[in-house]
Image 1 (cartoon, rainbow, N blue to C red):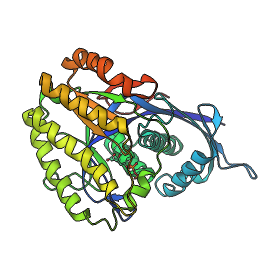
Image 2 (image 1 turned 90 degrees about the vertical axis):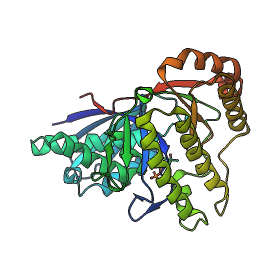
Image 3 (image 1 turned 120 degrees about the horizontal axis):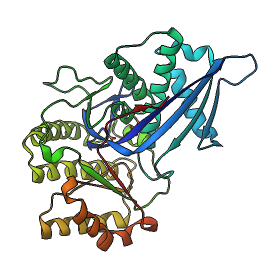
Length: 345
Ligand code: DP6
């Protein structure tokens, strides 16, 4: 007997960054992200009773063996086996694919770990022949995804999402993310995200190693305080629609993240020269036109340009005229706010 479950789950882009962790994958400050629409991972999980002498897990990425990622998934599955005990009794065949180019610098661990957490929760339901209440199911999947990758905890929900204990938000938690349910001004609904591909080569320093460097970082305390202040300010801004203030907060978060890398011991830079040139051009364009566009960065050289849907045409022509020449193979990805994961089967 074989059974198959398929989930698609999105990547997300953090506006308030998670950088620094404590305990078992718990964040040192709350973070807030926007879930993407087009950049998703699709996970197909087929399970059958374990047979002696056969491997516990067989994994393929886009049809090809990938032993390095298989090992990461094995570790993740072992870490969540208390939450979904069924994994100890079945052989798992997993195949996955991404809608975005491989190593495009889009957080693939967030979409992958959240999609797999969802598949495993659905498998547990099927084996137990019961359905968990939806809120409980997503909370459980978010908590599991967090163990695979912190930012993955936020990919379980659509639109804006908060992960981490936040004063004044009683259901917020360091253990799982929650959908952002406070007031959102129309200007921030359906925000667009154009991902400018400056460089897709693998990072020299992983995010996990970067988080670790926060442990004895001289600016750690100031950073966690700054993130809390930026979060409080962003919550006001999301309600009142002040896009200029939004730009200040979101860009301060992105540049602070990279400043922390540059001032770590050992120090490192993930910026590329073209990242800085593009940032200068974005600022000049914004000063000239007064258009509401903000940029943010992940732990990498690529830029996420955020702007309201109404400005799409003008921003696209700016990208074509002034930015494309700075991009690797001229590639940029058109994305925007999405509604969260989808069960396909
Ligand atoms: C800069 O979630 O990738 O994107 O928990 O070690 O897997 P691990 O790290 P990860 O860190 C993401 C860092 C960030 C900011 C963010 O997404 O909040």
